[in-house]
Amino acid sequence: MLPVAFPSQRRCTGTISCKWKQWDPKITTPPGLYVIAWALNKVGVISCSLTSLRAINPVVWSLATLLVYRIRRVQLKPGLKAGSETVSQDIHAAFNICLLPPVWFFTGLFYTDVASTFVVLATLEAFYSRRSGFLIFILGATSLLFRQTNIFWVAIFPAGLTAIAEIQRLSNNAILDPTINEACAVDYIKFLWSLSSNASRVALHATQSTYHARKLLLSLSPYAALVGLFAGFVAWNGGVVLGDKSNHVATIHVPQLLYLFAYIAFFSLPLLLPLVAATAIPSSYRPTFLRPFSSPINLRSGFMVATLLTGGVALPAIHFNTIIHPFTLADNRHYVFYVFRILRTHPLIRYTAAPLYIIGAWAAIQVLGSRLTSTEYSPSKQVAKRAENAEIKLGRNGKGPTVGFVFVWLIASTLCLVTAPLVEPRYFILPWIVWRLQVPSYTGHSGGKSQNMQRSTSLLSAVFHADWRLYFETAWLMLINGITAYVFLNWSFAWPQEPGKSQRFLW
Image: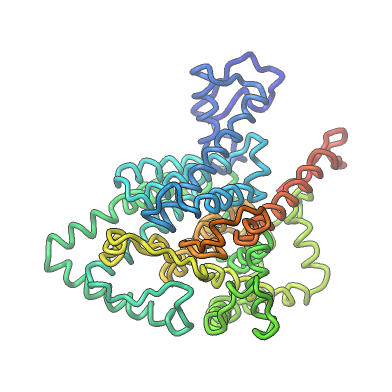
């Protein structure tokens, strides 16, 4: 589809017209956002002016914030009433998640990532809310109209969680799948062993029981259908990208996972820094406000797991598999250009980043198990029973994400990133959001407040007992957004080959 009215808004006559059978050979992604704009224009909601087109993403961003809040409530705290004290924290976390700079930046532009993220979030909300498989399929298929790599988050990721939950149910909870805050290093190995052994038993049992086989296949059917639809598209298209295929050839690019942890460490610094500080400071000198984030046994195990997952491959991956795409070095409008210019200033600099990747990986996994000291969520009897029956698993049990979630998230992230030779911040948006959705909030007082706490109305007391990390996270993300917005609006330059045409810095 060639959007005729979009390239030259000076010719806008109020109607968006499209040449549906033509395609710009340089456009690599599907035309989902163009179709939305065209449809809204046809029903008279927007005109073809730039202001109208750019107004789409702020509305979608607001709706995405509501979806994130909904997922936080369903995913982490099933059964909680709307008036719960944790509502404000989930609202705050939802707002912070949607402040992710590569998402927020494009909210003011006519660009596809905001709408793409929204549809993926809608699919995940349907999954976590256990809505019909048909709805999940429709939403998942719609997400593919925006970005092809959404398949890993609307199909592979929920399919992995569903498969583990079904195997857990059919094996009478035989899989060893502890929450992150309860797991030690060996539990990650035990999980893989118990999952594989129980999966083989369940598969054998399914061949002998039509009922169990049908139920297992039915639970996975929407995701299998999405994968089949995507495979058909790839076969028909001759590849994943729609245009400019020669510059977007799929390859193995393992350092992308390392960049993911650096990405998480940078944008989520206020969440990870307390964990790192609590580890570095001896317990006898550790400040009170850091104690909720410290657990020596779990911290050591988390570090060991991160070392195995990242440190064991970091240096070989950096040495043998670092790929710097020509586009990265050719376009000095993007911040990634300057990151790689720093990494290329000396041959050894890229290796010195390996410890930072390891620390980032360890912290990213371990923060998922941050202890909610004195406020552990106690589900209702009905919710607890559902959890026992594997109806709520992997981050939907009110106790935080499990080891199984970590593996499924890593698999989906690997499939999404490792096949891309080009490094772009937008590629990491969904891995970050899915990870951030699982990070629990901390409250410094118990659910059953003491009389003194009930009588306390001071602002200082309220702030002290809140998750102060959320406020620093808000400030940090708004600082980044403010700087990048200022640079985009006020710092422009011209390329020698395009004199008189202003270029601007962006993600």
